[in-house]
Image 1: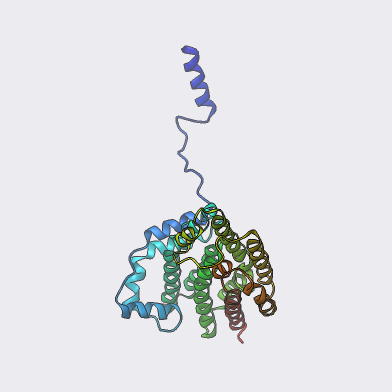
Image 2: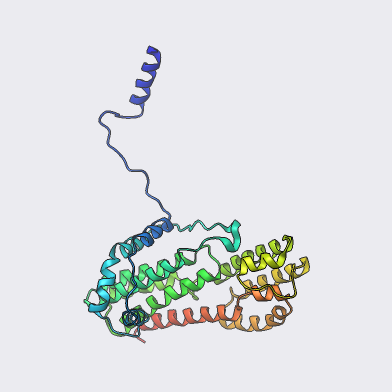
Length: 323
């Protein structure tokens, strides 16, 4: 017993100044997604009358002037959420913890709040600029650019489209500020560095398409193995099963896989070249089985989204250059 007590004391002494040592915090997370979840939890109800909602949406899209009376209370109620999100954008990693093994059943419950928070952040920058604080506005919008990149990280095409809808308002707000002479040279340099760090088309569309492909292929394989493919289809898709194509054959799944890989490769090309390649792939798309074709997103619409982001990015670069 005495030996045990002595050993315990020696271990405590060896571990440091246990009697006068300082308490230490655990290491903080490097995963931005965890902080974003905290920001979502801190968000307050932003519901308002339709007129206010219209002003909010138009202001975020750059179609209406800042309205302090109507919009400031909404931002004030969500100040903690906005600031938490902005701090999170400074973290090096972002893993949303998506359950890829669940395929289409994986939860994306945070998507509506992510979109709402991105809009609130854009509006916060507009308020700061309206108050003459251009540096804070730039910091806010640059945080929004980073948030858009994290929104798309590891996600399917819907995440890329959600990130695009978050990215464009901030790019356009920065463009407007630059054209109106509201940015000094230091701020212009900060924005230019952030814009150059973005992909030309804003996001990794090829990766998003690849994850989309894997998700749909998992559905097809489940339908192939299901005792009642029609019932399984309706449970997953939420719509009536097609009259043909169930269960999908191995050849149909292989044809789908090859088409999706070709689209993924095309979306890594410059958008104008990709448009031509995707047009050539339409024959292969139309030859897919009814089930596969119905589950396949529009490749041309994805490429159109790329062009939209690329155009906004180029316009911002020109505005910063005074053109």
